[in-house]
Amino acid sequence: MPLVDTHVHLNFDAFAGDLDDLAQAWREAGVVGLVHSCVEPAEFPQMQAIADRFPELYLAVGLHPLDMDKWSATTADQIRQSAMADQRVVAIGETGLDFFKADDGDIQRQAFWSQLTIAHELGLPVIVHCRDAAQATADLLRQFQQQVGAVQGVMHCWAGSPEETQWFLDLGFYISFSGIVTFKNAKTIKASAQMVPLDRLLVETDCPFLSPVPVRKQRRNQPAFVRHVATHVADLRQIEFEDLAAMTTQNARALFKLPDDSTHLPSSPRLVTTG
Image (cartoon, rainbow, N blue to C red; front, side, top):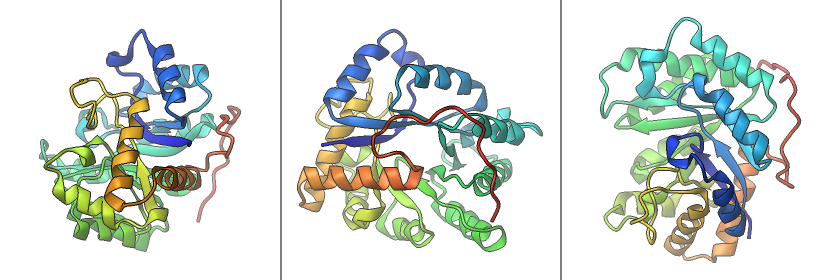
């Protein structure tokens, strides 16, 4: 049964040297598509080189909220141009707000708004990172949709409560669960995974981080392990794994506009749309 891992970081040093072996493993696990998120635009050429090797890999481009030291007057244009130059780009991100370790909320909001604007202009979804900032993130997204226009996306590696989850569902967002949902004490996250409508549910690894149970002792997470996440979420919801896999794959294809055969698109300039 096919699966899509909607959030990976294969360009990180943890994967240097054995990507071919990892690709064999994810294919054997049924992973037919992967969305490679971006921490900062400077890493985008590395990501493109990996996508050249693995046709099931799709790309996002953006700036992580914990990397505001890299935000400048030209960053937004760099993100926009990268997204327009490669048709394999299926999202802007990861972007969002993170108040857990940082106290630069104003610049985070500015960068987030700018990246939402790019996503709106290009008709792309956003991959949203949100940590200790659910209310602020929901408020900003709501304000953007009211003042600028529609934007769709996914709350990635979601760890919020059912109440917080509903805020983003009401905004039209998908909710993606990572290996955290498999952890024994993640009761709130498990409750959120049970209440998300099936047509808004996604799964991911966020590899190389957050290895799921039962491979938690393997410090390096990998795309093949998304099968464990999907299995656990299916068990939580008391549905068959095959049904969960089929639905999350359908959802990933709908959100990111992935082709059903999971072959990757030719590189060509992206047409800019507004409205």
